[in-house]
Length: 270
Ligand SMILES: [Zn+2]
Image 1 (tube, protein in one colour):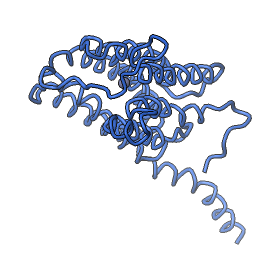
Image 2 (spheres, protein in one colour):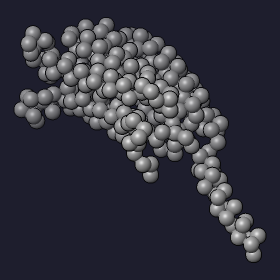
Image 3 (cartoon, helix red, strand yellow):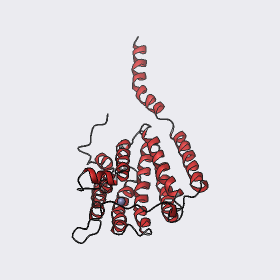
Image 4 (cartoon, helix red, strand yellow):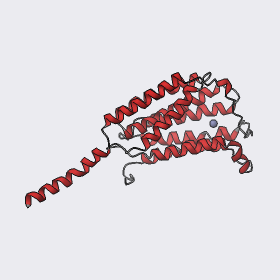
């Protein structure tokens, strides 16, 4: 009897690790899926028909009001939210060794986005300024995908994704002056990968960054972008949809920053 009880206890003690391992498919298997997905996206970016940038009409943002001599003040000044979130995030990273791979790239990318997007919105009719806008976004995006991958697959996969997405994003931003296809693939293909990762369980030892929260604010930002005029009219010309787009996109950093709260008052995981 004693033996039987001992076995039961030993089994109970083993069960959590066993079930944990089983629910988290072997990292190598997830890495293979990831490589497959990135390979398909690369093929699409290279082989899909070109979308000529000239065929894409330059957006005309509805709120062009000047404030204190600053043209397009709402769309320019709302970029300060990227700066604030970037600095806040980098401050949170100091002294933390367990931060996910890509976090520093993500926050530095937000600061760069503030610079690039402000530069663009000061004169949005100059198409070459779009490159500056996209470089910051590409860096923040690479950082986010690195975080998502290192949280859900493995640290080494996260490192590889940061480098790959940095290179792909910069190249795509440059090529987008003439052909938008690679940029569209980086943006929407990358987000599709992030959604796929968000649907899987965190790997053992992950911090538990709520990827769904980041994606929620990203989608919200896209909706505000589409509703530039609608929001402007609905709010009695107080704020435009594009201005709110910047604020929503900056808020996408909040779920990451929240996870990086100083260890002492770490939230309980459930
Ligand atoms: Zn913008």
